[in-house]
Amino acid sequence: MDRRSLIKNAGIAGVLATGIAPAVHAQETVRWRLATSFPKALETLHGCAVKFSETVKAMSGGKFEVSVHAAGELIPAFGIVDALADDSIEMGETAAYYYTGKDPSFAFSCAIPFGFTAQQNQAWKLHGNGHKLLDALFEKYNFHARSALNTGTQMGGWYRKEMNKPEDFKGLKMRLGGGVFGESMAKLGVVSQNMPGGDVYQALEKGTLDAAEFVGPYDDAKMGWNKVAKYYYYGGWWEGGADLEFFINNKAYAKLSPEYKAMVNAAMDVAYNDGTSKYLYLNPIALKQLVASGTQLKRFNKEIVQAGFKAAQEVYEEHSAKDPQFKKIYDDIRTFQRDQILWNRISELVFTQDMASLKI
Image (tube, rainbow, N blue to C red; front, top):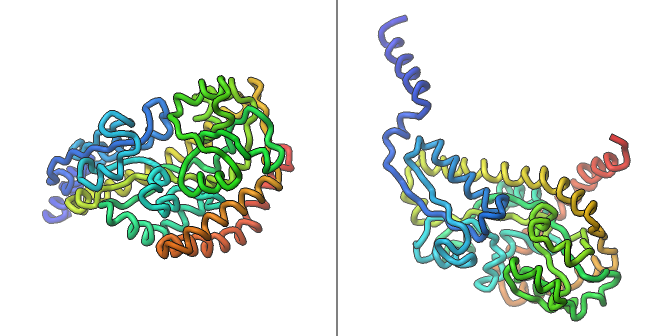
């Protein structure tokens, strides 16, 4: 081996010994703040931000640190978009549909009634027009968004009475999300109640609240609502796959070196894979425990689902008629979704049905 090869190989050995690339050694120290919309107790939703932070720190050899702040610690739970707009934070982790008061199109980035599943959402954002359309929407607020985790298809909520027909929703006082989902439920006659999750138990117990929806079995069980509302419905058409996201301050991101940008992007992917798969692991276990404790699991019938679809379509038509940007994104989603449904009918749907019919 000649002298040049020895030097070259020695250099590679040195890199392998340290575990950190030379470019990382040369990087400046960076400190970011990441605020979430969730309490620490929800280690699924808040936890994906922690996973992101830990990954960035490990990849950078400790030179790039991201401090993670639960809801209310640094800013209010729903103050993330405003904080990004005025450069108060570098990142947020939240649900885009919390901000439909700013623009109803925000809902498209998280979940809409009769929208995407988790896999379809990622396909649209990564390989369809999703990120392009949504980044253009978010640009005026000084951020862009990337997936943090997906809850998968959510449950239909907790009810103090059985829901047998669409008319049962009329006058129902329900804690639910806003945006196009809230508007759709209002058309069914639901009286939306906006209250913190911690207040729901007492409201259900006293009867000042008739129903509430949150996420799925694992997170729902932590709320304890099964003790005061025994009917747990599935077939929750409003969130086929809710995409929680990292909102990244555009100015802060632009200042990063190419290496640090690559770390941020890779760490978001790590967090997404960890959080999304965690729900797949935890939800079946929690659901069995809920049923064993007396929860009555029920499915929304076709009549109710059809009424929900009709209500949602009316909301989409109303917004599309007055908002060109809303219409542009909505039309693109539906075009993409039609092909996904066609493929699903002969792929995963058939496989899942076959597996469900077999004794394994």
